[in-house]
Image (cartoon, rainbow, N blue to C red):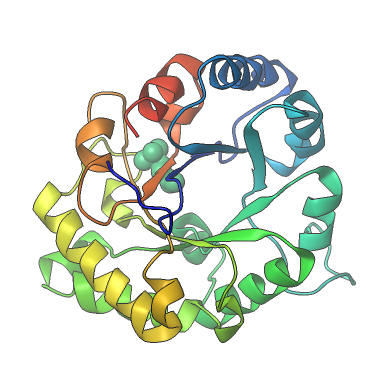
Length: 253
Ligand code: PGA
């Protein structure tokens, strides 16, 4: 990939989902050590479960691996049992937060409007949001993939993102955790459509916002996916849990 001064570095973010206990910090330490020894082209982030955020941030201190949350509540504080606010993520050491992941949209009925409100809360707390969109297999088979993801992006990206650091992630639901990936042509079409939405919404700034691809990114497909037009990084689930796999993906950027 070639990048101009106005093009941000690609972002490779690991999403640990509901995986990880104390011992998993060793994997993150191995990633940090390798990244420090040989700085990659990409910015690298790990988004652990909330229980590990603080310890991971401490373990990464001074290293070039960013730490992120996987969700936040739209309110800054309040009677919301079990939820975590954006300010709490910052307090624990997070710099980024994944919002609108399909597993949250599906299992927690998160609407585009709620995701948009969460993005506003994240920005207010100083976090860099990674906003996820993606179609189901039924939507793709019905020829609706492009319309669905561009609609989700328009409704999930608040105007407050203008001029702010953020990333948009295209994650086809049917590719997450399945080992299946779209073709390079399919990724190209969707990323171009998402770029058009970003430019329509945010002008010149929208032309530089990284659009990540997520869904079964592995060491053996990372380089091809990351060199696809308009792919500005990756959101990596399962393959981010092992340092060796995650580092192989990072090397593909
Ligand atoms: P996967 O998950 O890499 O395990 O498919 C990606 C994601 O859900 O972010």
